[in-house]
Amino acid sequence: MLTVIVTSLFLALTINILLKKINLPTIIGYIFTGTIIAYGFNLHDAVNNHTLKEIAEFGVVFLMFTIGLEFSLAHLKKMKNEVFVAGTLQILITAVIVFSISYFLLDIEKNVSFVLSLAIALSSTAIVLKTFNETGEINRRYGQRSLGILIMQDISVIPILLTIGFMSSASNSSVTDVLGEMVLHAAMLLALMVIIGKYLLEPFFKAITKTNSDELFVGTILFLAIGASLLAHELGFSYSLGAFIAGMLIAETRYKHQAEADLVPFRDLLLGIFFVTVGMQLKFDIISSYIHIILALLVSVMILKFVIIYAIIRINENKRVSMKTALSLVQVGEFSLALLELARTGGLVPAPYGQIMIVTIVLSMIITPIILKNLTFITDKFNKEEEPSVSQDLTSSILTNHTVILGLGEFGRNIADDLSASSEKYIAIENNIESFYKSINSGYNVVFGNATNKDLLRTVNLKEAKYVIVAIDNPKKLYQVCDTIQQIVPIEKIIVKIHTKKESDIIDEFNIANVFIENRITSKKITELIINEE
Image (cartoon, rainbow, N blue to C red; front, side):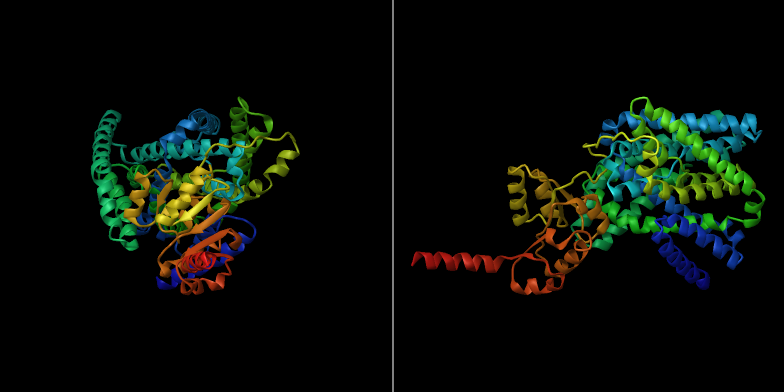
């Protein structure tokens, strides 16, 4: 077993290093890794191991948890047309057309057609939003349209997974009994979660953060995500539903950003395992037998999704924005793999159909980064009019050309006051719970978290900041913070306030020009006062 694990890690690292050079996502590397080890160690049957499946499923669980953290009613209200109108229309129209073709024209069994139609309706949130966030295209009109549709797809994953779960387990029960039990259990689950979220979550987090223990905070997030998943599972729902609701509850607290940043490594690791298990299901004999169907399906799906999305967006957008949005979402996404896996384990989708769909999805995901990289080039071939920028917030990383203050003690608050008085945008990160609550109650724009966490720094859009002010009084953390941020922003944007020359020596290797030593500045001012007095 240890040989398999070591080999898998080596292959995943090596393959992804190579794929990153050609801008392909790590998901593809994990899938290739799973295929290689399945053949290398004869592990095709291992994918049916219950323990392995549960571990892999928690990649999707943590993904749904982080989606819950980003689920903001305020954001949805701003984007109601993109999310609820365009997003819902895209899912429904795509699913209806695919189901009709599959069931009525191709004579594929009804349950299989239903699952396939839902799988094809979904696109890749991971690839599209990751790429758009990195390039800044999320702030373009087509970025907004794409985000709205993807949000609706993410929301729809919950009822889709629930539906397939009940289709798998309720074959011997009447529809009325199943619906009645589902409604009762849903009411129980929501009641429990709301009570916990309203009365227990905030005091619990406050007690944990007062310990100033990073590992206890991480343990708390894992406990809440896994505990909520287990509760939902015991009531007959998917693990993912519980995690999603838990994420939504934590999103209403002041610990959302740090919770997301701490969970990302676990999510990505377990998602890697999930996609490795997906790759283990690929069998070359089936692929070679159905390669003509796979290629025909790939082209047909991408053309169909392009036409549907283009037509929906074109209702109230220009041709260029509609085309870019449609091109961005022509792929089939990672949630479709989870959906197919759930349907496969529930006996709803026979092996040949599942294999054909998995290969088609993988190919569409491989093609997507290439399309996104050449989005403007492709669109220019058909339409050269310019789309407008979007000034409103589309993600949690809303600020640009702003100042990030790391540490909101008295000095940090003074800086924030002066920036506010000058109508300058800023956001602060504070890790001391008492200082955090004091700042929140005083109306400062501050989030709770550890300034050394790169995922948290992304949420405050550090890369787009005008300046980053380091106002941390702990010399031990000073080096870690400066080491982290100088990897993200140029050193000329970094301003460090420290007390003594000794602290300056700690960060000397980073060659930060804007280092202000408090004792030196104070001594100079006093000396100048004495000299001028004479």
